[in-house]
Length: 607
Ligand code: F6R
Image (tube, rainbow, N blue to C red):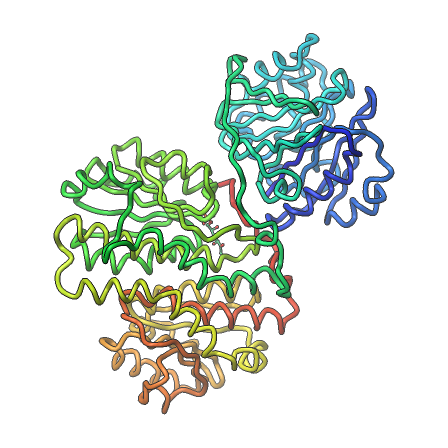
């Protein structure tokens, strides 16, 4: 997804912009560009493709003089990924350059209006209307022109703007798309993502919707949408710079898989206190729990699958019906939701467009909204009534791993917390607390028990199709396992509820067809086992995921993945580990771009 950087200071701007853009590469993009101001002239350089090509084109920035500039990585939405459509866009008079994240929904009428007035468009993008509006409204005051321009825009935007009349100054505007200001000494920055800033500045200011900022090397001034100057507090970024880098692993994804024991511990530990679960951030919700008639969990992709996995614990422990809906469906389904509904939104980035839209839709219907989010200050976190953070740290690989497990861990905590508040926890409280508390250790064991995965990947990586089967929580984990496999290895992977096989899917089972069977729930083991036998007898090669001492499965399966014994109600956060590793090593065998799979973006901020 698109990324923005901006710099003003006493150093050469272009190398700093390129460095910031490289930090944003993980978000996914298909073109990149910078605009640098030297005296009163703005020079724009853009490429289709990778930042490496932009570096080559401008000699790592050495070919571009100037101390002020903006940069962008674009993930195509309006118009193909071409050099013309890449940002920054320049006004016809060469006075303004603009970079933009988000979507301008009313760009078509604006474009027609500007064309009628004689403005000449060079791209197919929605963004270009912004730079022409700036030219049109500029009467010697950039701030006024920005306010007038922003007033004409509908949709979401984070903007970076420079004006040749104001050397040494960069402007940032935020409306429903993240933008962060970084404070330095004799230099200041902005970026759409803190990862692009941490190397240079640890004191940051999060812009909020409707705010804009004017940065020079000496100062940062922030204004509301009417132009009134406002004060905002800086936040100190505590992340280790290393945390945003690979730390010795070949890929961010592998590093993040290995970080899961620590990430889940960081998520659980502050909430597991005095033999119970505490959520200070939910104090306002507690008195309202008794009036709930249902819980709706909504999210996209893996976050949705985290909801599918966490649902069982919530429903079982709280005795409240739980529905899990894709945010992209929920937002258009006119759902039966009212003030007796708790809507739980799950999002690693907190910027997923469909999740935000579902939140707005359900909030308008009166639902209480609770966000489970990783990125502090993100849109979902800000818009929801209550926010519980997953403390996974920055997730760089496009395919989520620690984002997913920490989301599942939070859902377990919420299930226990709500159950206790509602006096519905029942027997076995200590045992359940112990089960959740031991998850980081169990996750580490699941990593350690599966040293054979690289070898298994060599066996299975050539098969074009892989099926995943399981029941109950095993099925929920199968969905996420199959998504991991397809998104990074490009193999066709499908998850089926094991009991559904006979209703059609079994027609696809042929000699040597790999089937990954998740058998981690003793209560329904015999049922899944009978499905394993069904596919085996049709020639399938079965790779079973189970406990070491599960003799029945061991004797039927061709190959094995292991997890330690965990209460099945809380096992999803452990079961997924071998499947993440298998997907990783299969993708590696297939020579795939593991951290940046094709066609995918880390943060899907468009519908
Ligand atoms: C898959 C993956 C995606 C995200 C989905 C939601 O590995 O990462 O399916 O889970 O795009 O993203 P967030 O959690 O940021 O809302």
